Length: 296
Image (cartoon, rainbow, N blue to C red; front, side, top):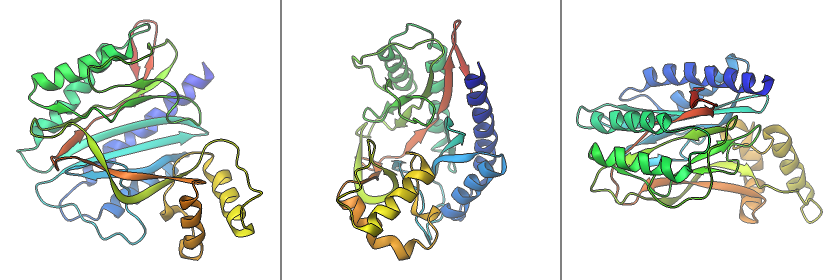
């Protein structure tokens, strides 16, 4: 139970920070100001970001965090996703919300909240994850929206943000059942019926992670070995942004080489394939004997 209580503490921090973050989303505000404020709020609560704060504007669905010196601002009449995570000694929580700055986009933002609510209502021990995907897609379609099929929810364990079981957002056969005492991030992504219902990768990469598995250092140059060791020790396998590396320009070339040879994994920015706007709402959920407890 101590572990579960720590996950609950992590979730409570994430909930408070998410609510504050949503109030910051206004036309003309710099994206980097929002993300850095979110990350600092998490630290002020005695935790660390589980990953860089993501801010997805309009067709950008996931994996964008502002790089150092970014000048991007929130455009007028846009739809903005804030996706944040909290690590409390490795006890993780993951949550997201959508803010619509146009009345035309508010129905999609609200639909993403309704879809998530219905998905959580269906969660209990023994339920197949494919059933959750069915509920998500059926509810979204009934509200006049399409789910994004190649983005999914995921199980969470200590220091493992994506741990095993996947929660689909469409009605497809998927292996796995929900288990009592296990924790899952459920995150429906919605787009318009004109959208492709899938995301594609941009060339832009602003989020990174030291590649999993044992780090083989022997074939690396001394400076590569030093940087990789520092990143591994500091982030403990969780994603990071180059904004968090002091004097990054001094090690940029080394970092780029490590990405090129696969020792560091990059997460490309993901956009809706037809350029349609995207909404996302996410909670971290504990499956209990009677159903589901929302931690965020």
